[in-house]
Image (cartoon, rainbow, N blue to C red; front, side, top):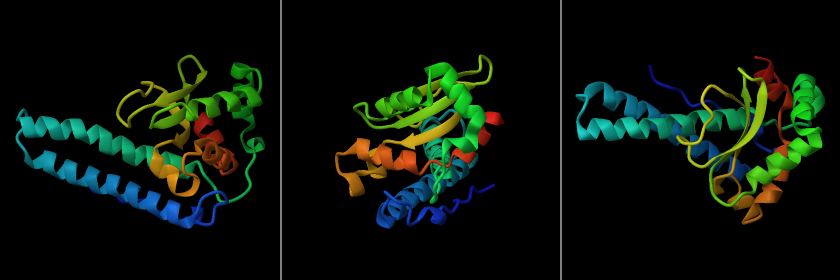
Length: 190
């Protein structure tokens, strides 16, 4: 089964994100989808246990997570005004763990502005019901096993450099304004 690139053209004209930046980002995502399909096909034809097979197996996690993280990222954005009122259950949980949604947001932004490249992810642990703001350095390393990603922020340079240069904090502020809290809230409830 081939994986199909999802379309996120509804995000074009989102305030704080140029269409050029978004189109470039969509193209990068489509590359992950293509690579997932290519690797899956190659692995299906190759004898297991060979050095080539082993390296493709290792690479598959990078490409797969790159594909899925971008889908989560684009899906938790909206080209409209959205507020946390659309996710009241999540809002209550954020306040419970951080004391207030403002404290959560301060921690989320601080995580996103750490030096390095990667992802900032608000995770939910269904076993303990805890919430975590986590830095994921690479697509395939640093994820919390068993936890559900609720809010995904891409902090690789390709996500902001064209529009913001080195001003990652300004990009994060624009991202916060574009969060689709209805989608993030549904991820939490599910």
